Image (cartoon, rainbow, N blue to C red):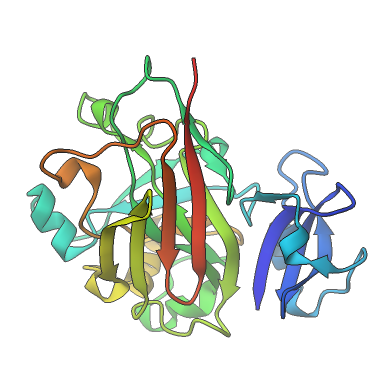
Length: 284
């Protein structure tokens, strides 16, 4: 099953369940600050697959606007340096444990929405295609063998990074959390469709040209281990989002370097999920 947050033809924002191209609204979105419909359902122990419709169903192709499937996560945790080939291309030491940092939820945007920045703020905007794990129930001190039982589903994220800030002294929080620097979507695919997150092809295209191509099997630390590791220190709540690292081919690792610019189209694809598309917009 697939789930998204969209603006429907009636101009209202809904969390929807998608089946055979039809979107059934099962929750209202943006009703109050912090009131995310998926988080509310999961926290209450309700199964979104069985939730009753609250408004007229419609073809998902007629959605007027796409938002991040989770609109108000309590936290977004990122894991860096997690693909073997990416570690090699950047020349980083191989980490013994996952390297984690936070991205601010205010940076989240959705499918088809622009990634925006001012050239006076950064001239080195880079792409990082990543599989995102969406937590389905409270997790604390879970073991690797049980970790995937705590996952609601998976989606696509591009961990957009301002490299001039990243390598200019920032400890990853600011450089990866500019407004719109966390595009997510287009939807969450639940674990009934993706049973093994370590067998998914992952590709990125800039203006139609493939710049990243690998498979999630190249992760140094698989999703289950990441959840075990993080939950040892941090309670993971329903709706929390975890990014899991990017494969080789990032702009920073190329010769010459390749950074995103005004007018570019960024396509972020993961097999079994779909394609997240975002135009790149510079503004003054």
